[in-house]
Length: 79
Image (cartoon, rainbow, N blue to C red):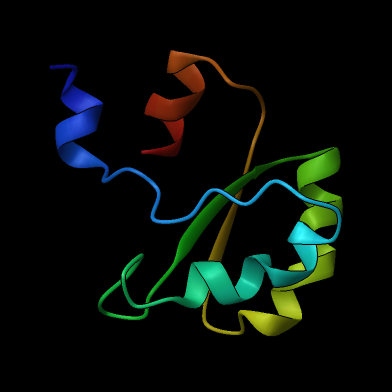
């Protein structure tokens, strides 16, 4: 079993439909995602930044991190 599957639980919800992004903040705020209610969200600078603008008002306590890419080195720098 890969290490990440033991550290990061799999998603509770997979929602693929028109308008799904409008409900994303509610999904992320679900206590099954974070029992403490604290969220850390990593997004890219391009479309991730636009997503942040769209849903951040619905997640006032979230901590946002912008990452430069999707490589292992980027994940290590973020950690």
